[in-house]
Amino acid sequence: EDTWVCLYLGNSTHVERVPYKLVADDYARLTITEGWSSSLAAPDSYVFVTSNDQYAFKKKMYRGVVNDQELTFPLMTAIISVEEGAITSITWDDGCHFCEDTDSLCLPNQYTYDNVSTPYKEDTKTDCAVVDSDCTVNDGANELCELNLYVVWAGTDKNGDYMHSAGLRFSRFLSYSVTSYVDDAKDAAADAESTAENVRKVTYLE
View (cartoon, rainbow, N blue to C red):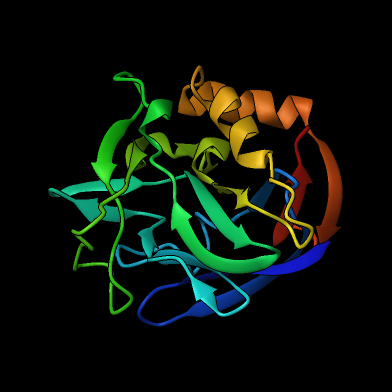
């Protein structure tokens, strides 16, 4: 069943709402291209996910400052929980199984709705960060640092049948680093839909 999922990307001066039409229980990758070099990229940049009046907490995105380091968080996974076909919550998965000491850092990355300077501490999720100095290549942005947000589904559909994409996510993600996952997913996945070229893209992964 088709479901609208929206990404909100912004900072203190600029906000964009990017809608995606997804198929419930399909494992999908939402890609924002050329974002790292755009007006969205700022120390206070953030992203969050919404669908059917449910919201995930904010995460730092491009060029965030953590412990006096300039960092980018390029990979995130949103888990959409469903009960008998109705979306009940959207949470973030723990993302540090992507980390390698050589190219990334594992850091808390979940913040309140008010801003991205106040961590949400009750259930702090972590993500792998890439040092911003690794995000530039030949005067442009390294593809590694562009935002790739994965969506999986958990719970039951309107017929009471269990959804399976969350299980696919766990089996796929455990063995990848940030670099190898981006490369592998790019090579292996087929584009299912592309809207507004050079702005957003959704890829369904089998």
